[in-house]
Amino acid sequence: MGAETEADRVTIVLADDHELVRAGIRKVLEDEPGFEVVAEAGDAETAARYVLGHKPSVLVLDLSMPGLPSLEALPKVFEASPGTAVVVLTMQNEPAFARKALQGGAKGYVIKHSAASELVTAIRAVIGGGTYINPELGARLAAEPDKPEGPPDELTPREVEVLGLLALGYVNPEIAERLVLSVRTVETHRANIQRKTGLSTRAELIAYAIDNELVDR
Image (cartoon, rainbow, N blue to C red; front, side, top):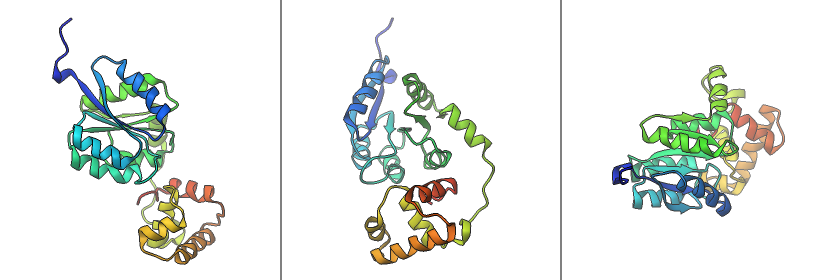
């Protein structure tokens, strides 16, 4: 067998906020011939910096990390290294999240409960110029009917923004800061959203935002 060349080497930046999870993923990846994890990050901002420094073949990116939401970091990643392919590795198995990730430029979408070999398969696919999505999730995406354009339930554009940020994990003061509003105004928007949708709990609102593709709109 010939020696491995630089062209055969697949360099990977791994981004996940749980150190033990990263250790397990790193072990899986580095057991694969030619794969090398060149950096690890615990948030999306740091991952983007490491992508800039290393110009890796692949960024393996968790969606749920503290700080800047991972989907919002994708433009920074591609600006830092246009040749880096992004594979999302996440617990989020809702089609709306997968659709947003793929629309944002990710080439792979793998669910964390999948077999470890699936992540390797996804990386092999994206470095070859293809795409990969978890088969079960892909079937659900294909089966979904087209949704009508525009906000549902007569939500205003500002209410859609508030609900989208809520679904991404922001709390009222953080939403107020991002949208340059008072906390009281955000609370008013949230009350109007609950009145219009007939929903009351945070979990119900998040599910509604995902189902209606309002996340990061």
